[in-house]
Image: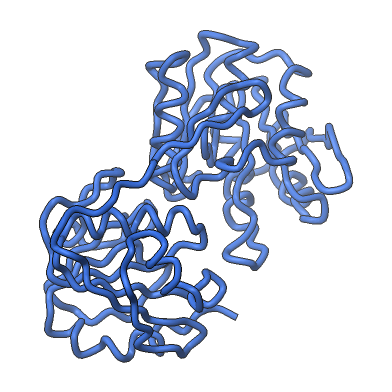
Length: 335
């Protein structure tokens, strides 16, 4: 079950209503934070896009430089990204009061020990309800210990640098590996799009065999976009790195679309993102262009290809994953 943020944040309601806070990485969807003199900084483009322009910091990896007396950080499911967020929040506002809101499934029950390990700070749990917890600590007046931002991994024979919490930071996952194995089966012409690019490994794998192609890489996560930007810089310095809400924000034409898109919202399967990508693909592909998507084997993406493509096929499959390829859009479907 999802976190009941109204219950989790109830002990802070009065403080949030009358104080000035920096809100860091609020979760997707409505979060019951009372109106106030608050500023927001988020790594998630759809969240950033719906915030009032006057309340949101610039969408990039640079933490706001203005000091804050109160900081509310929503903990990430990724432990190393949480540490990254806490360190930057502490460095931005020495002496501030920092509260961490965490769902139980994001490690909320052990946030205190993680804060102590990361920053050397003692934290007190001030609430535990609504399938989440609130932890409070004070930031010391001196500078925080910096975190090592970049982690270097080898993926499919390619050295890739990845920021905290970006998909692929622990190495090449089996689904992406299966898709990489399929890339040399087809001629590739025209621009390439890596959708939900993460570290940019799919674009890098295409460019290894087809250097010089025009590349667009997109994602909703600013740390993924910055990771891809760094990794593509040596081989595709003119690549377009684009923050998107979903595939409807994009325009083609592309000769090839490659993607290992997200298939979960938390721990729950969610096909909205890949379904919108497949639905948008006929309008994005150049004549003769192709889309390649890897997915968990049990997910019913075939019906989305049936709806949108007159010609498509399953080109690879193992016990866990499958790669689906769409080539000829349906002519009876408006695009």
